[in-house]
Structure formats: C-alpha cells, structure tokens
Length: 116
Length: 113
Image (cartoon, rainbow over all chains, first blue to last red):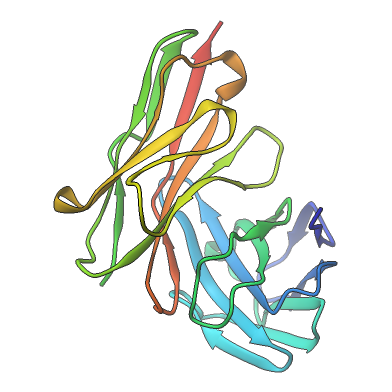
C-alpha cells in the first residue's frame, strides 16, 4: 500500500518565518504534488514535480517554492510566512506519466499550518 | 479556465436515504473524471474514476457515478447511505493530456443515524 508521509500534523509559525513542509513517499512514484485545502475552495494546486529537480507551478504558487532533490522527497517552502497562508497543506504522489493524469493521487494526512 | 462546480456544500441525510451529489465541469474536450472522499481524520482517497467506455462507473463502498457528456456532469450516487459515509466528497477533472487536476470545492455529507 502506498504511503505518503508528511513530517508534521500541526505547525504554528510566526509571520515572516521561513517554513519547511516535508513529504516522503515510499512507492517510487514519478509525480509529487503540493495542494492547499481551504473550506469552500476545495484543493488548489501549489506546485508539482514530475521528476527529480523538475518542478512546475500550479494555480497558486505565489509565496511558495519547492525542492525535489531525491525522488521520494518533495519539500514545500514558505519563504516568508504570512497569515493568509494559514491552511491545510496536502502532499500527494502518483505514478501517472507526465501530463497523462489518469493514475490516482495518493495523499498524505496533511499538515495544518497556522501563521500568527 | 477549467473549473469544477459542486452544487451543494453541505448535505444532511438520514441513514438509508438515497444520495446524489452533483458535479459539473466547464471543459468541452475529452476529460478524466474522479471522485475522492475524505473521511474524518483520514487522508483523501479515490472513490471512483472515469476515463472512457460505459458512462456508469462503480466505485468502492457501493458508490457509483454517471458521466453525461451533453450536460458536462459526473454525479455521484448511492442508493442507501450509512452513518459511515459521513465524509467530505470532492469531484476532480483533468483534461486528456492536460497539465493539471482541478478539484471542486467539496461537499460535506453528514449522515444521521
């Protein structure tokens, strides 16, 4: 069974801090994704990666960056956290070939980030 | 821009009632369609998917969905809900060979026992 592990379940950070959210998958999946989930807005794609060191912007990349140095690990970085980045962050992986989007996404349990 | 609309944000049903959750999308070409579910305290998981063929697809736990191309819809149904179906349900759509999967806003279903 695919396991996607997010390093923290809850995080509380101060405005202006640099924040790292870590995600690891154990199924050798090519693609990894970062979404944020907000009530009434569903899931919005921040960034995704289809290979090591490769990344593409999603719908809401502003204020975020990502790093994928190893296939199993995909990090989301908030360069200078702001209160409007308070949200639930979900990592996902899939075996879908790039731009094919048919394999299901496997999600982690999420990290609830509060920025004060 | 491609968008996905889920008609109801909150639905409350009694056990054994029938369920239908609406999902409409805006893109007119070939699409891949999904329903995901998030049970309380758990991660999102795939409920069912449609790529081509029979427009009535069956998923896990007795759920099914019907793709109606002329209506750009992919509604989720279950004939008789159980208390354990309490969850948030997300419709998601991608274009064939598109570059992203777009999720709807979600529908929170509460089933009263």
